[in-house]
Amino acid sequence: SFTETIPGTYVSNQPFGAAPGVSYQLLITTSDGGQYRSTEEQMLETPAIDRIESDFQRFQIAFFEADGTFQFSYDSEVEANENKLYLIEWSETFLVKVPFPSRFVWLGENEVAERPSSDEEEFCYRTERSRNIITYQSLLTSGAVQDYPLRTFESTGLNRMALRYSLEVKHYALSPTAFDYWQQLSQDQSDASGLIQVQVGAIRGNVSNLQDETEIVLGRFDVVDEEGRREFYSPEDFESQGYQVLNDAAIECDTTGLVRSRQEEVGNILSSNSNLDIWFIDNGIDFEQQQAIPILVYLPKRCSNCTYYGTNERPTFWVE
Image: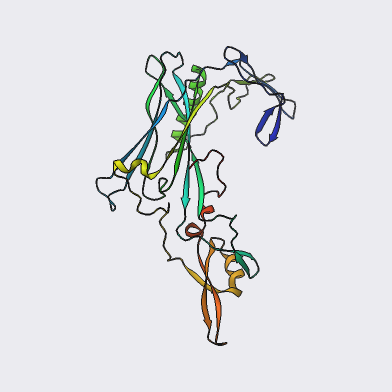
């Protein structure tokens, strides 16, 4: 039995581990009394991922001669494996640095204070995942995966390799029926991205309504053996291939969006424009009172607060 711990996530009431050669079946009772049942499925052994290959190719024509494209692929070498069908996922996490970090925080009304050291706004971690369904059929007798193109990105724009970058790949061996299901979903996803929108819904999974066999049930139940690998990269790893870091800030930013105001205006400015942050406090002069006054200097968060791009909480898997 499973209990819904958070919406959409169900956890077994008793810990267990799936085992090869054992059949598993999912039974569902809905809140309105509906009864659903999956077909019996077995877990297939998934080969380990041996390595992630990386490469950098410089642009032939570029504003900065070290600009180019990063390419990542992976290999899974096995001597003999009956399973040749895979579902592939990847996720990347990289360190983002903003060029003009905010040093002050708004407390409400017209109150400001120095930003505490625990509220990191210069360095953050951004995570992105594969958005598309990736299926792969090995054409090798062994079922191995060789040099599968996984991830490609350019050094321009949001430079993921400016400081520190991590890539993780996971894959799962699939049965022919599961592979066909995911392939159909992948094709529908690809078709729907074009000019003609395709309504997904006719793809049958392996779950059926025990009370109404004609009902089309979306989704599929499978028992999978997950294999994954994570690698970390730094700019120095690609220097021999011609990559250089011109600016370790992951984003290009200038001060053209700079705003200045008296401190008594901070409440109105930030409440009406949540995309600004206080960069620093400058010295100004009140000519009427003939005295020095603080002047707040603001910048867009994309230039001054890294949480615009990700989280300032370090991931548990991160290593320097």
